[in-house]
Length: 141
Image 1 (cartoon, rainbow, N blue to C red):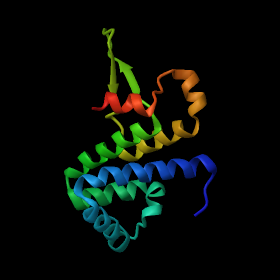
Image 2 (image 1 turned 90 degrees about the horizontal axis):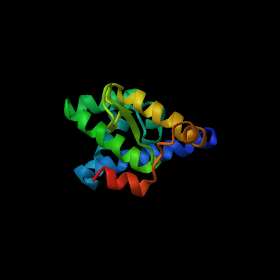
Image 3 (image 1 turned 180 degrees about the horizontal axis):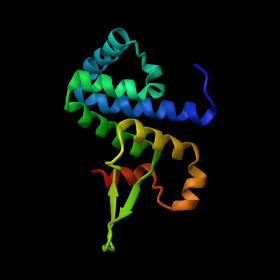
Image 4 (image 1 turned 90 degrees about the vertical axis):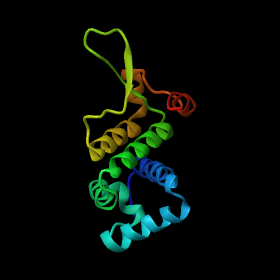
C-alpha cells in the first residue's frame, strides 16, 4: 500500500482509534471483528481508512443501531489522537460548545478530520482551537 506521507500517518492514527474503540468488546472480539471484515466483506484492516463508507456499512450490518455508538467511540478516540476539538457558538449565546459535529456521516467526519490532520499548521493558525492530546483527554472524561 502506498500513500503520501501525512495520509499514511492519518491512516495509522485512524486504525489506532478504531482498535482502541473496539477494545471495549475485548481483545478476542476485536480480532474476530477484523477476521469477519476481511472474510465476509473483503475489507482488510489496512484498507479500512480508504474504505470508510464500506466499513461503516459493515458496522451497521454487524451491530445494527449499535454501530453508531461504536462510530462515536472511534470519533472520540480520533479526537484524542489528533488533539483537535471543534467548537461552535449557538445563535444568541455567548457560550462555546464542544461538539463532535453531529450533522456529518461517519465517512464525512473522518474525511473532515483527515483534512485537518494533514493541514494542521494552517488549520491551527486559522482557527486557534487545536488542543493537545492531554487537554482532549481531560475534556472527554
